[in-house]
Length: 378
Image 1 (spheres, rainbow, N blue to C red):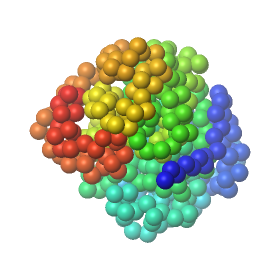
Image 2 (cartoon, rainbow, N blue to C red):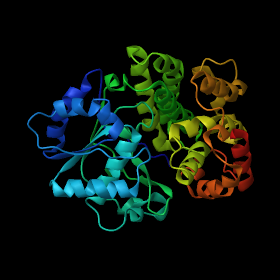
Image 3 (cartoon, helix red, strand yellow):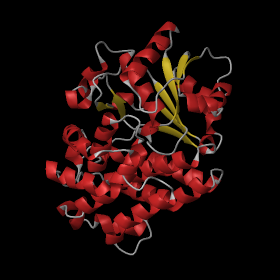
């Protein structure tokens, strides 16, 4: 049975951050905790959000790490409770938004955060008691501002997913202007994350025709504009379309992701210093080749349709086109260039097999399949 659900209210335009107070009033947030990170604060983007909230009592947690952790969630919850906050505003990339989702759960639910992790059977334990959240993305990558999931490294070092329709932000304020100062390498890495979302969810065998259409359009926008956004960060058209691709990828991936993400989630837990979007870019070519043999992908001409959206002559050109794009964006040449060691493979594969994205790949990967994908991506 197909389950199709779109719930987030989205404000999308240049200057949309100015609507932040209006959205707080609509949602019922009167004492927000802003969850952000040091980079967003240093870039002056946090101040733009603060300027949009005149007269409101505001608390700030600005120590979100590059990969959000259970420890960071606990620290933010302390700030939330000490200031008697009644809602959250996430200002940042996927890390800040996911950290805020963790706070929304932990500030309103008893027990350790792992109790609510998807692979621990925790999704039904997340209730409507969660703190309301407004998300203001400052990158064009994860699309967490419209997604029902969060990825957090818990205390035992596993990188786990938390999924519930209750943690979908009550509002997403997508202002492409907030991405103008994003450095080229971060633009490239987060942009490839968005492209990976569009591609991987489109390849998934689950039935969700609206998600397919959203993903394919998002892929076309992302692929056509990522280079321009990376080379000229102030290109308004490129920034607009890349942010749209990011949002669309996450709207679509309610359908499910696959081996790219099961591998990158696992490897990100093994070495939290590795950037998630960059890892996705490294794994995409090998996973596309692996998925080309899936019956659902063949039957529905999934790769041919993706190739058309990417302006490529044939489906067989996709893996090399991704590698070429990675090179033009000055991303690493492979996992080895990122410091990944072959003797990590066993632990990476163990985590990938347990990851929530493993079962929604159009082909179920074995230990050997994962080892071959890792070797090809090295």
